[in-house]
Length: 68
Image (cartoon, rainbow, N blue to C red; front, side):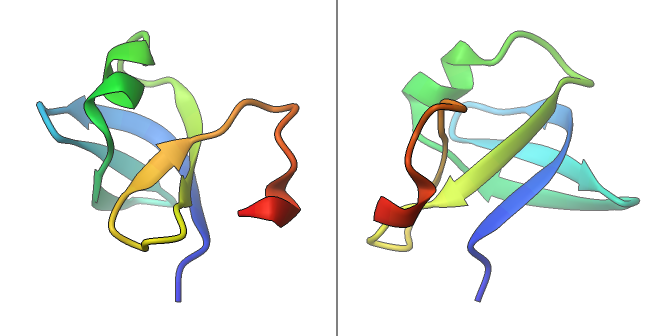
């Protein structure tokens, strides 16, 4: 089970992003609002899985990861 994935933003699509994590490109489905908040490719980001396990999302650094 994947809890989070961290990597370099390689591509952005309407409903997903591709993260390059140690040379492997992972297509990850992300809510549109989170995709719109990303600045550009080659940004390092960390995506966490939500409780429904359907989407990943971006958490602010100050968020309590234990409540996910």
